[in-house]
Length: 107
Image 1 (tube, rainbow, N blue to C red):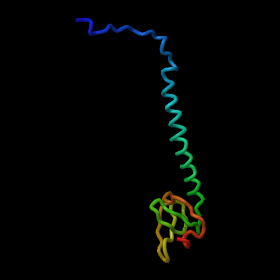
Image 2 (image 1 turned 90 degrees about the horizontal axis):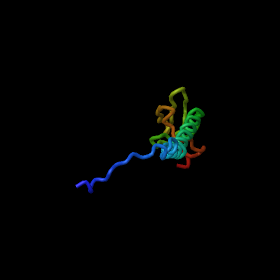
Image 3 (image 1 turned 120 degrees about the vertical axis):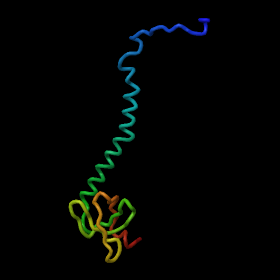
Image 4 (image 1 turned 90 degrees about the vertical axis):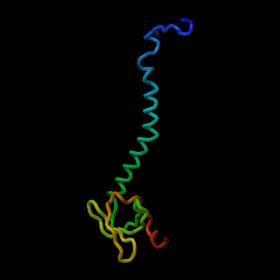
């Protein structure tokens, strides 16, 4: 009856090595850093710079897809003119992109 169960033997402790067992984990972390974390940090830094440089007269697109011209800028908010005599106030962080001058007339 014992021929179905094989004997378990202890492996030699020096066979695995300490650093070699962590090598796959280190490689996976490096791949995640260079493929996911680093590009996201770069995009965040660029968006922070874009928001800091917003000024009156800039034509922008918001995260919601609205196109308009900035008429007033404060510390936390911008006022955006989306049509004649139609202005909305939104957070500076909601600005997704600054468009080239004349984009509103072309649209």
